[in-house]
Length: 511
Ligand code: MSP
Image (cartoon, rainbow, N blue to C red):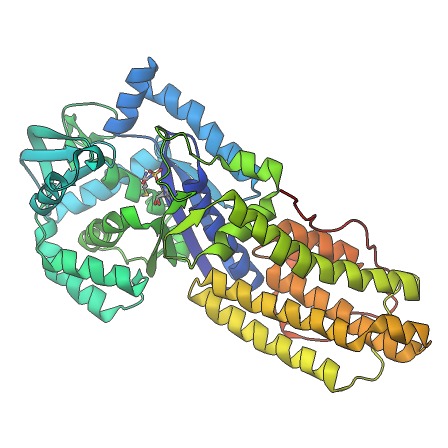
């Protein structure tokens, strides 16, 4: 039986339509999911929408619609975008689904039965936009911010159920210490540790001043705090509590991908809830950075929100994926700009990968009537390409394990540059003029084989382009069906295969 790999994105709020920030996490998760599938894992990839809470209720009220009408309308935008981007998710969860309501009730009862929930009164501040209770230190930070940067917060005083978070301060610190892979990157892990060392107060986990949420079992005046509800989605999808066979197969999650703004919910509250419920903890929570747009914070009021639909309709899915994952180290903040995007298209994609494929296949077309020639005798030059390839897979695998997508890509592109250099140095066109067909054949076979392995290395990043390349080099299968064993072997290109050069993969953009 193959090993499982369970990966999740955050579930997105339905008060807003999808933008580049949402697409970023989902595309990164899709890349890892495709990588792990090719490695032979049984991958379970979850995404979905977060549909309860005060913010959704407020937005719906402002629009004059019911919260569920808002959710039903906006969820389609997410589902359509993931279809457009060819996201390979296994499941799409909505927190308003019955299966999820049952899971939340179940875990609430389970935690309650351990004595970790009690009724009291919450008096303090609440940030509706982030659906977060504000601690005293956070309140001070907010008060010190310039007025226009301050998040809107409101004073709340209401009866509330509390979760004994304070009890988990030491268990959490011990867990972080003993499991260095739990929070990534390391600089984020340190931030979480200092936050927890600063002291944890019990957490309010129910609200009474609005009604759009899952009622507290046994006390319907309360709705369960939206983060308690939302985090549970990761359990619901894999069968909790009704299909424990499926649940035990996939839980714990191998990777929760999240933005840095929601790391605290995932790395403090979530593991504490799970500890209390006696469930295993996810293996890794990785927090990525935020995109600014042409140097500015992305915001509706600035009118600079990037709609992924527009980018992919002007360019294409793979270009968008490539840019997001190549431009900045995963984990750090970065800037999205049209100029930077076009730079990547013209440089890496058209000049690098595109040019290698078109010039190589062009020569097989011209000199060998579209048939890949035999490998023939190889020289040190061909051996060097093979060795470089074997080094490249190793380095790509290592980078993928660290989610260093940009480094994985730059290492593949180094190999592409080496192969392009090999073409320049061996000058096959001169050999053609001199009618040295055997040597020419060996070189063109090496190029066809290099293109095959480059397609395999790039598949997770450029699924559509690599399928096209696959067809161009005469392979009829689905590239997504190829498994790791075939990637590791150099030399599988068969002589006499008919290629189809066709159009260029990427066109240069003139601006
Ligand atoms: N509903 C919660 C998540 C619950 S998970 C159990 C939520 N939703 S969200 O729709 O507001 O945000 C989802 C993700 O989008 C977050 O990971 C956030 O970091 C990410 N981004 C929002 N704007 C972003 C950028 N400008 N850049 C990169 N990612 C950004 O939070």
